[in-house]
Image (cartoon, rainbow, N blue to C red; front, top):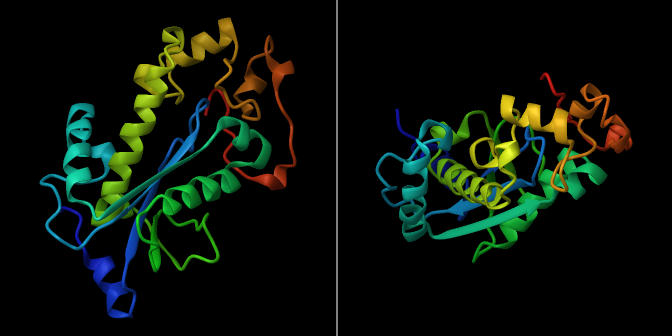
Length: 222
């Protein structure tokens, strides 16, 4: 079943005038930024085949970006760097990236639909969390495609073929794991992540911070 405007219309029925759908990508990566996209629409017919970015081929995602850009009433994109993630934790990094995405919209929305069950944005934004919102909600699906394509393109632009960033976008993969074991982390890696605990040769590079600063540190073996 394709995503619909059911949730946007439900919020509008309660008096909300402009709703932004928000989705993130990069939360579980070992390297690179976390990226967030915000999309607002005029509730018009979305591009054919629009759905969660993970359900689309890379080629279809890329071609759909132009369709979304020409159709959406507004698109905002924001990132938080790997340095911010190391220093502040993933929750605060997500909050900052989402704030930057929302600030990039041409008009401030009255409410936000966040994909997932965790409100990492918080006040002053009225937030509605929607599990699998990227599958059920048009504006969130559109945000998922833009966020995925833009972050993937950035990671590929870094080169670093040994780490396979053009294919894995900084996420765990056998190629990425092997490169880390032999070459160590690059200047783009998150050094507070616990994958370093599994790399005796490079463990000394790990950055330690207050565990209350955030969650999401993934190890080399999951």
